[in-house]
Image (tube, rainbow, N blue to C red):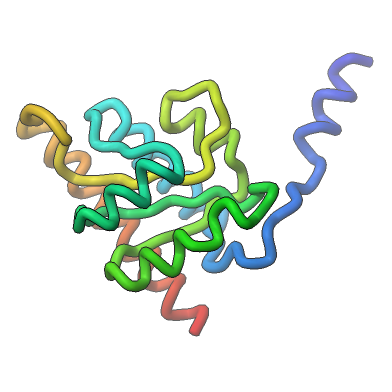
Length: 150
């Protein structure tokens, strides 16, 4: 009986924000979260609205990944506008919990900024290559999803 309630919890639809566009499909969502995980391991990740906004305003580039089930929505409404002004690609993923798990944090995360360079130190060539190839692939798909939206 306990397993029935667990599967019901997983099947309940998420309350997505109406501004969550472009929303990543299953395949793109999986790739994006994998990229977030890899960036987190390489210490190339900014977590949270405050850190992401500060980083974008300072001119740092990257991919902004925003959770679609944020409540209240006012917390993140300014982030897509800021990204568009700074020419930073952004994509919504359905769950803030999945975003936190990918970013190796226990606390649900509203948004993250994936960068290709770490804030401190240097990356090994192998890690840098993997991160850059994943980043380029996801950014290309995000650009396609965004262009299909308009």
